[in-house]
Length: 295
Length: 123
Image (cartoon, rainbow over all chains, first blue to last red; front, top):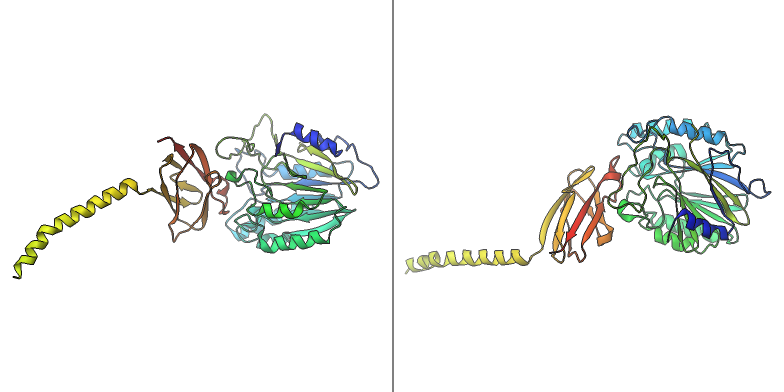
C-alpha cells in the first residue's frame, strides 16, 4: 500500500506517531524529554566522490553541511545511522578506498556518542563489500539500545540485490532471540518491498525478510536508496525512506525511466536532507522529523 | 548405366533446394521474430524494442563487456546477460503499452541509468 504523507499521518496518528518537517533542527521533538525516550539521526546516500555539478552544485560541501546540521542540534542524538551509498562507486579499488577514507574522516566529526553504517550498492556491490568492511566493519549486524532492538541488513553486497540464504538464516535466528514485546527497528539500504522493481527499487528476496519480520508486532523499517522521503505500509510494518545528501531522484509514481532531479541554483539543497527518529521502549517509533541541510 | 543416376540427380536437386527454400519461408512466417539486444556498460542496443501484441518474439541477449542483467518485471522477463551468450527469452506480449527493462546486476557507476523500453502495439 503506497501512502501519501497525509495518508500516513492518518494511519500513524492512531499509534501516536508524530510526523513533521523541521527546519535544521530548530523544531524540538514533541515527545522529547521523556525518561525512556531517545532519538537517532538517519543520514543516507551521500555518494561521496560524485561530482556532476548538473545534479549537485556543492558535491563536496553537502555532506559537511549535513554533519554540521547534526552537530548543531540542541539535544544530541544517541547515535547516527547512515543507511548506505556512503560513497559513489568506482572501478578502481584504490580510489574506492580513498573515497571511504575521506568519508570516514568527515563523519568522524559527528559530535554524537556513536555512528553506525550500512553499505549501499555503490559501496559494496563491485567487491562484495571488501573495502567497506575494512573501514566500517560488518555489513549486517544487530544491537539493542534502551529497550529497543535494532537489526541492520545488507541487501547490496550481492550485486543481484539479494539478502541471500545465509543472511536470511541469520535474521531468523536473531529474531527468535528477541522479546516480541520490545520494539524492533530494521535498517536496510534498498527497500525490502517491491516499490518500483523496474527502477531497481526492490530487494530480490525481500519478501522472505518481510515474512520473518511481520511476526514482530512493533516493527519499523528505515531505508535509503531512492533519494527521497517515502512512506509505505506492508501489513503492520511501516517502511520509511530517507532523503539523499547528493541529489534527489524522480518520485516512484513517475511514468517511464528513472531520472535524477537537477540542481536548482535558486533552491540549492532542495530535496536533500536528514531525519530525526524519536523512540520509546514502550511505543517504538513515536516521531519522525525531516530536516533540511543547514546552509 | 552409370550416367542415368547422375542425370536424375541434376534434375531432382533443384526441386529439393526449392522445397527446402519453401519450407524456410514457411517457417519464417510462423516462427517468432528474433531480436538481438547487446548490453554494455551502461546501455542496451537497441534501447527501444518495438513489438506487436500477440506476435511471438525471441530476445537474444548478449553482453559486450561483462555480466549484466535484463529485467522487465511488468512482462515477467528476466535473464542474466553474459559475454558467452546469447541468452534467449521467448515470449508473446499479450498487452499493449510501454514496459521498462533494466540491468538488475550492479555493474558500475552508470548502472542506475542502464535501462530501455519495450513498446507493444496492436497488430
